[in-house]
Amino acid sequence: MKKNLTIWCNQSLLVGGIILLLVSVGTCSIPFLFPSLMRYKTEADEVGTKWIAAITGIGMIAALALCLPHWAAKIKFSQDGVCLYVAFKKVAQMSYRDFPYVFYARYYHRGVIPIGYYPEYLVFSKKPLTIYELEHVNQVPNSRETIKIRYRKRAYRYIMQILPQEYQNKHKAIFDKFEK
Image (cartoon, rainbow, N blue to C red; front, side, top):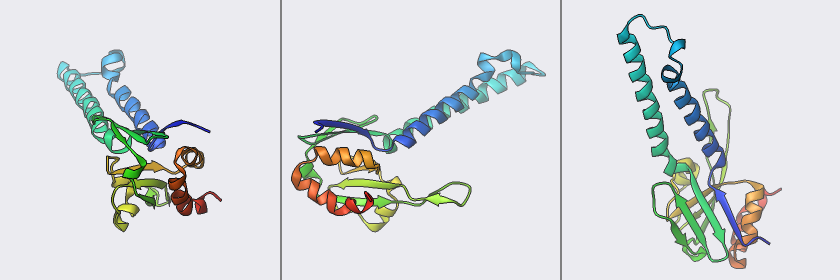
């Protein structure tokens, strides 16, 4: 039986964000790292290209830094309670009694191609959430009031091992139908 569990609320978004950051900043740094690849007609072309690349790279870093607290939170479960680490915010240590509400939530996720799927989430909340919030759980940030975790069978099983018995029964009533 595990004593502690550390989990990211949405690992796929975190990995995707890191890859996007590396690709975009890498692309923007080409005029600086490999100037011989660039064919400029005038010196103004060179300066303009470097300025645009620098602004684009800085803009991507800033955009990802602003989005990071919304979807990349580290959550540590222990016998005593939950510890929430959100970027640019204070660490929040809370007990399980602080989260009387447990929800199953999902939203319709699709890209440019109109083929989508429904990512599922475990949501711990201090207050009842509306149906709109549950259907748009990707827009609800992790905070002291609400903790959302992307549903994965393995993570769910580990969380069930750590939760106190009174909370395990509440979670099993909601989520055992998804374990099949």
